[in-house]
Image 1: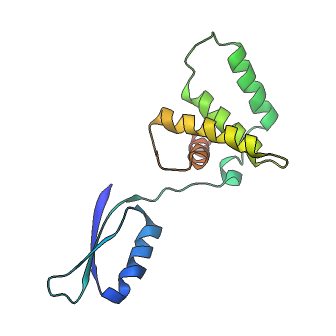
Image 2 (image 1 turned 90 degrees about the vertical axis):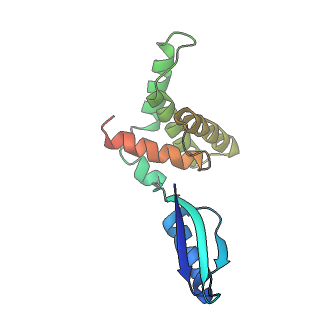
Image 3 (image 1 turned 120 degrees about the horizontal axis):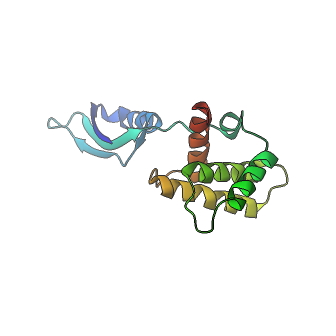
Length: 149
């Protein structure tokens, strides 16, 4: 996270603030007049904007839903009760539930299930508390796939 300070003409304040919000994940903009009172100082905290791949991009090379469900069932069936599973398991589970929720014929229960599984991954990673959990799963799945896992 970093702070940005910009001095601009009052007529440009809204345009500059909008451009910053597009380029960065920005907090609230605070506006103060400059000492001479002719321009404005804009202050905000910002973070680099995240790139969130869409489902088509994130799951382009993913195994079929049936294959992923078989893998999940096999993993659970061969793991001792109350065993802590690796992050990859929870990521793949959240991704397949996201894909099911996106499928034709999905209903609100599928969306809820996908959201809960994705939120678990966000909490597990201790990251992006304010992001869309399903978008985060898509990003992380795409990164995992790119790494060859």
